[in-house]
Amino acid sequence: MIRLDNVTKVYGTDSVAVRDVSFDIAKGDFVFLVGPSGSGKSTLLRLMNRQERPERGDVWIAGRNINELGDSRVPYLRRGMGNVFQDYKLLSNKTVFENVAFALEVIGKPRHVIRQQVPAVLELVGLEDKHDRLPDQLSGGEQQRVSIARAFVNRPLILLADEPTGNLDPATGEGIMQLLDSINRSGTTVVMASHDHRIVNMMRKRVIQLDRGVLVRDQERGVYE
Amino acid sequence: MWSRIAYAFRETWASFRRNLTLTAAAVVTSAISLLLVGATFLIQRGFDNLLVRWKGDVQMIVFVASDAAPEQIAYIEDTIKSQPAVIDLEKLKYLDKAASFEEAKVIFTGDPTLLSLLTPETIPTQFKVVPLTGDAALVRSLAEQYRGLPKVEGVSLAEDEFQIISTLSGFVRTVTIVMSVVLLGVAVALIWNTIRTAMFARRREIEVMKLVGATNWFIRVPFMLEGLLQGLIGGVASCGGLWALNRAWTSGVAGFKPGTGISALVVPGSYVNGVMVMLLIIGALAGAIGSGIAASRFLDV
Image 1 (cartoon, one colour):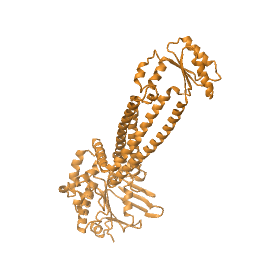
Image 2 (tube, chains in turn blue, cyan):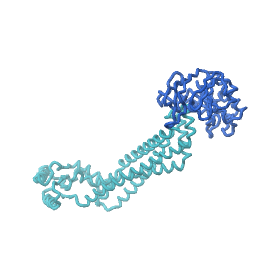
Image 3 (cartoon, rainbow over the protein chains, first blue to last red):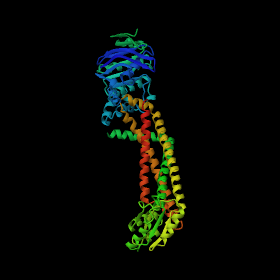
Image 4 (cartoon, rainbow over the protein chains, first blue to last red):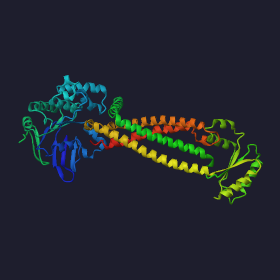
């Protein structure tokens, strides 16, 4: 589903974010990218949804080399991916329902599809009774659930999550992990960047560890160390 | 499809309201610049009317009575042609009754009373003479000679005042064109800036849109529509201004003494309508292009 071949990403002239990284993620996998801040986790995620392009190496998504993708095709690549962030990136002037519906609206889904899919995904994340609230009327955990609902409403093949529990207390973070786990069980490939030891050790999933942009460990059912 | 169109209009309207002061500035600037563009065209057209009979270096017009027989006309022509050293025979032109009447209609647009007295039957025909010499005294003595010919009603010379009008026309044209181009540039820059502000206000939204796979065109269209609307509203305002300006001018000219030649400065309504349509198109295009460029530049958030 996702393959990186000897990928190197340099910012500016000499700041190497990722150096010669290769790995392969199968369909339906759940993978943690771990490492300290600045180790290149976020850069890898940004390379996977073509927010960045590598200086060297190739990134393959669903059998396609996305570096060779024309700019006009990138939106269609992203429709097959969901993105979740540490800061949720919700639109503060829109309700929970509108925030989720927005993701379908802007890719031109008809209204009856939106009316059907949004309540279903809000039920999945457990927010069906808060659909008319504004983001700042919700707790952090609830806001992250909205953001996951928005990422998942289009039933993407891949979900990319960048420190989704970073702003949450341990108990709330666990709830978010259960949600991501159930999304993964429905067949969606999940790649999650995290430096939260507890979460990584609790989940016992595949762990890819980075250190200053270099891949230092790739372990099935790994822990943080 | 329908939901996309509805989305674009909803977003355009919301953004319009959010940026009211900047929008107003952009609209007013584009209205003023477009008004100036329109005025340039009208002023130019007025001068052209005034100078139409002297077009093409014509320095002398020999008017021939409307009841002149063909032989008499031929005699006058032969007389003029007998001085090939002084007169440019290739540029010598004879305007028959129909052509003279067409020309009169342009010159006397603002003087309907005089125009109603003229008919294609009673109008004098004309020889337009382009001298080869710059010697004014020689040209004047030629005119004297032609005045004595049978059936010549009169000879007009391109007096110094027409030279002045011609120079003035060129000067006014340059000034108004430069001013309107500069102001149009300012209007585009203001529209560009409004769109940039609008996009900055919505940068988070745009970021989310890009991440969930909205195409660049989908993101860009509401902003372009906003710019287009600003230009178009400016265009409509400038049309109103131009219409009022032309009306005031036309009625003002009607108050002048007949025969002063000022009536030629009145521009026909059909021409004004054409200019107004053009202003609307320029306004809409400038707005759409300015905002389109801004939208493309600031789409990388």
